[in-house]
Length: 335
Image 1: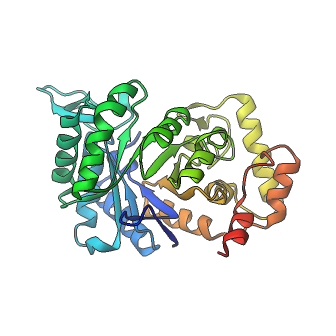
Image 2: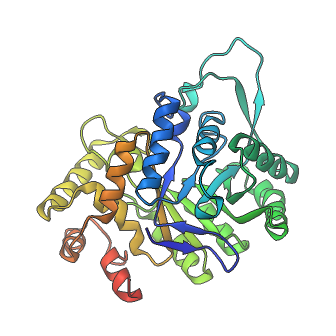
């Protein structure tokens, strides 16, 4: 799969990354064996970019991903994790962590920490859980309610760590477009992980963040391309941004699916490939909990999409005319 370098001395990110939140038992528990098989399938499909975080399963995702990658040549893949939440042990008895979305025992609590020390400790603890000697990309994770601390303390410390070579690239990962756009404008981040805000159902990232990223040469990795499930399988009861989809949103997703089917294109393929049309987008990250889901994602990424389908989506008001689409993007840059 194609990859994009995040800077002259920074790592590269693939057009499709494996998101490891499901390896942390997101919503449902999976076995260690199934987690390892998911990473194995990703590697076999040519995926060389992997994303995790301490938040995912109270460190379980990092431990499982690190174990699965430990025998792989370290210079052949890019690994990203996140900082901003430290994990601190709780004394028993332990309930579970389902209130935070993860089917794991609540052996730890998450403590927000965007101090300079929190950045150092967070990276060190992630390396211990991963069992690796370095991470390639570190994202500030969901600093929505901690903007000043993130800008005044966390980001400068990550900048020092980047200069030292402790981390390869730094960025911010959020489910909104406004604050990451400020990071692009006011800092020298290498990359933004934008979740759910540039999809077939939500193009809010197109207003400010993506144009700013393009002007400043900041790469964007798009997560949440299925908007938590609705674009993977639109049906009653499907979720949009982790809540039950409204009737209006479900109807829009069904119309999108019908148009795609008219061109023999699975909606999943259109949802995966659409963000890659924008020149600022380096790749998409997709969570998977089984080997079969990974194989399907790789196939959807390769699925041919005729340019007439994008034109139809625009003409029917399902996509804005100013949203770049993959065919046009590839034509312009020769890919």
